[in-house]
Image 1: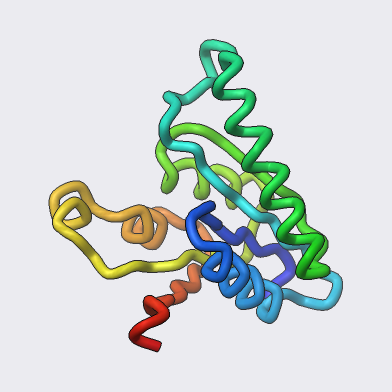
Image 2: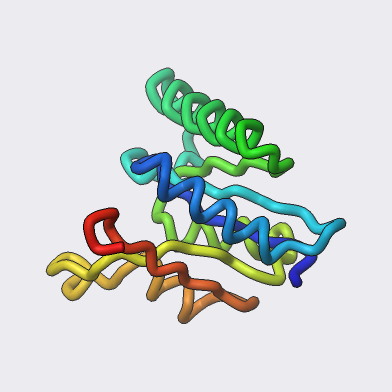
Length: 142
């Protein structure tokens, strides 16, 4: 069991997000803390310039959706929505929260992963803590 878990969640499939959150919650100590991290990659890092109205809207919407999902699952969690490159943003949250574990979902690699590398590969190679990779299969293959 882990004291501090960062669960990286995309906003694609609600079922996948629920599965990943349940996996993270099952690995969490009774008195542990769950951090749910999501990255909006469409916007450049907003560290140097302030976010525009569209960025603020997208970030707020992601925070609301993740908060609602955690409430529906009765899982208390701290929500972190960042912009930039997903792998770097997740690693930053993990470092800032002194995470013991990062939980991520893997997908079937495609040509872009082979050319540019995947977010999961980046996290695995640069994480300072353990990483749990959940290989969620598409519904038809389960």
